[in-house]
Structures are given as structure tokens and as C-alpha cells.
Length: 203
Image (cartoon, rainbow, N blue to C red):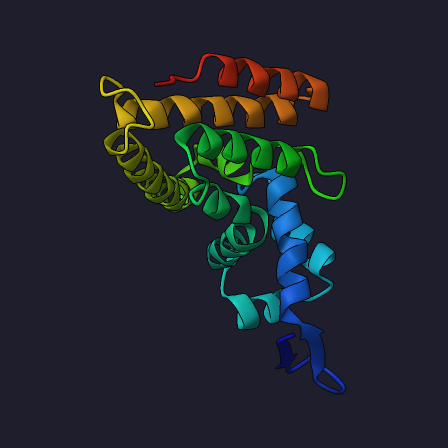
């Protein structure tokens, strides 16, 4: 693990594991959102001082972008595996069930960090919104490409619009995230997935 060594006001240099500190920051941002998180919240959770935070990560905005990188790497790995599934239906189901596992985890805040932070509306959060939207657009483009391939392979009916199907899937995923964040049970979310799969376009 990477360790930062920073000068403390008095005494010996302060050492801390930057990865563990970043993971702590991620949980705070995830549970409170960007605008709802204060520097005091972050330094308390990370176990460091404000000067140490600035020295290791930059400002609050820079720290959030790093936390979002960690979130995508650790919590959204199922989205990359989903694209490797043999059929469009399997891709969609893997995506939704992966989201279900992430959203009902007992060790993480509920809901989707991207959804939580894309609804931030203050001027300070504009770059955060832009980053979340850009990341989502990149993921959507990969899904559109996968569904286009499925249509070329005859796995999806010729009349199905891959971009529209991707938007439909993302609307379901966003709905799941909002419901999970509002206290929906695992059974409720599984019922939503089962219903979605029942109406998925087939050949």
C-alpha cells in the first residue's frame, strides 16, 4: 500500500496509508454526497489533518475525483464482466444483478455513488456533475456497442434500437439505486430485475 509521509506541525512526520484514507473518504462521499460532506467529516474519517489532506490529495474536489476512481475500480468491476456475457439478455441481467449486490451490501452505504453525486446542484459541484455524467456516458457507449454487436449477430431483433435499449437499462439501474437508497428490500429489487428480464426483447 502507498504510504504518505507528511510534515506535522510538531514532532515527527505523520505517516498514513493513502489507500486506506482514500477508502474512508469514499465512504463519506458515498453516504453524504459531495455537497453534504465537509472537510471536517473527511479529516475525521480519514484520521488526518487538513494540511495532510491537502498535501496528499489536493482540495476536496480533487479528493472526490480520486474517490470516484476508487469507487469505479472496486465497486463497479461487475460492469466490465457484464460486457463479456454471451448474449444481450445475459449482459443486462449480469449488470442488474451486479448492481443489486453492490446496492444491498452490508458494508457499504446504500444506493449508487454516481447517482447520489450527479444530483448535486450547487455551483461548487458543477465539475462533479460533469465528471459523473462523462463517466456514465463512457459506460453507456460501451453498452451501446455491445448491443449493436448483439443485433448484428441476430441475438437481438433487427428493430431494436441499441441506444434506446441502453437508455432503458440505465433507467432501470438508476431506479434501483434510488430505491436502494430509500430503503427498498433486496426482495423488492429482485422482483424489479425479474420483471425487467421478463419483458426483455428476444429473437
